[in-house]
Length: 379
Ligand SMILES: [Zn+2]
Ligand SMILES: [Zn+2]
Image (tube, rainbow, N blue to C red; front, side, top):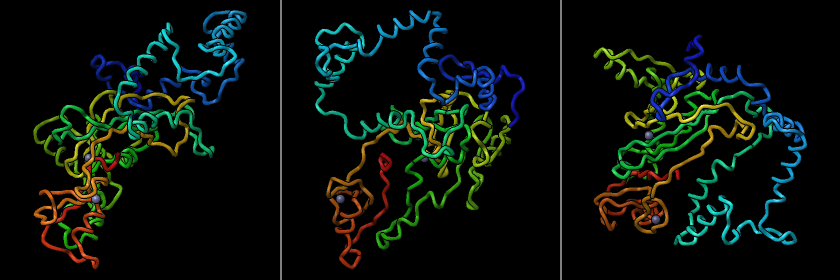
């Protein structure tokens, strides 16, 4: 895609206030920043303390003496609410705090104490996701993200095909770098419709894993600003955007074009930040894709290339448990099943086999069995 020569168009501004920006070219936007910044502004090198202090003093317009005075007055050592000769307990908030942060913290602690259950491990982990990789540096220099690289925040929303999702829109958030291709984003999106197995397998339950949709229906596309980016990496891939393109052409809509997602890097794209785009796979599983942030990499970011696409948020959905053990997530759904307490009924792999087949693996009784993939399979 050609880079616009009119620099103004590549500086994002609101198209609709607080909703989305106007359209801009991502690599040109990056160049705009790099032209304006000093290399030290986006360098990953840590400044030594003295240089950093000198820069700070110069920026704030204060003398070296004032700087020293501020440093000792604002030092962490002087910030305590415990006797000097005792080790501090960071969990204890003193009674009647006046410091605003402590007031807030006390409120939070008191509220937490009133809750019946504390956070479960999923929620704890969800909060940890981003923190875990903060400031991570790679072991090998070759895995280092180059200075001046772009980081995009991608939100992938789930299709509103379920009644329960009509008020909340669960999504996952991924950080991608500008040199990632759209195909790499496609591979990082986990959606149960890729794992779906179609068919009745009560006579041949061992065959079911061979029929996963992702292996059979590999076509998919992203849609950004008038262009359909098709996945054409495999011989089985079809151009599933052509129907829409031809439909639009016959009705005199503005023309749409096509490209390959594996040949398109994020820096090549022209997009609007905050604007809903589309990811479509498995024929009609449609996800909104919203880019919420595009920025230069900072030295405190995760700088290990291998950890990208970096998952920073993942929604959690309630899972359907096995009707027998109530422990494991359902893997099979049966109908007209004489052994089942309900119709249809879900079973985990183990309970399903024990209840429906003899020790030789022969089917017992009459029932239909369908492989079941729970929406919470990616929790
Ligand atoms: Zn999907
Ligand atoms: Zn079970």
